[in-house]
Image: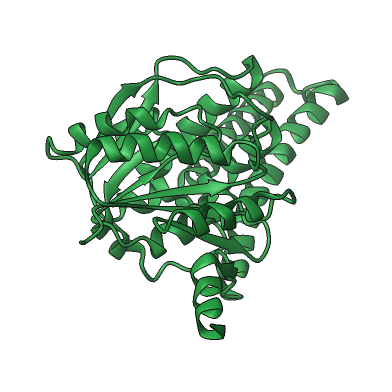
Length: 317
């Protein structure tokens, strides 16, 4: 029987939650009634998650485990699982059970209304104040990179048609954002409000610093907006400089003296120097990304998978 649903889950330091995640996920998917598989991508969190994944895979043949060679990040791990998926539809969900598996059916109902991608977004963020603000900034950056209005409701809880991955089948870069890559294959996005629970065990791997870095990587990796901002700032401050020069010349012609005050000149120089360094920094970010892409670094590398281990054991038998 062909698989219809492939559930891809990036795993990072979640050994304590994986058994409960598997139990609830299987119960929810069996209620839906479609043949499914569960792909757990272990992103080298340093705990015993891989041993748990191996145990789950041995007990349930619908579970497949993939272990990355090192920590690459959530979206890189997702890309690995998405490329390994065999179902007609792909569901992605975090490993912390904040997105209840019981809500998957609501995403599938919305997908049947003619969408290619459906996000499950919470009514309110359940993180701390600074984390929530950083998340909003990231979504603004994502909206710029994606170029679609639905970016404000983007979340890690999503379902999309597997055929969309053909649009980024040849993508090879260490900077990965699944939501931006999905826009390469469709413009039919939808969203549905879902319940979001509190994280029961551990802390989120996304710190404030990581979210800010993620927003910067997203803006410079998938959008030209920073370059456009640098151009606008250059024009704006160039105009200010021209007006200052005009003021100095008019004062000299009318009063026969220059503008007094070292502080005035120093502040003008500082402003223009700051803008120039800002623009150079943006250019440097883009040059760095071009450099990394020219090195052809892969977005991830596999260390092992539960399927390989099972095949090896069968060969020995």
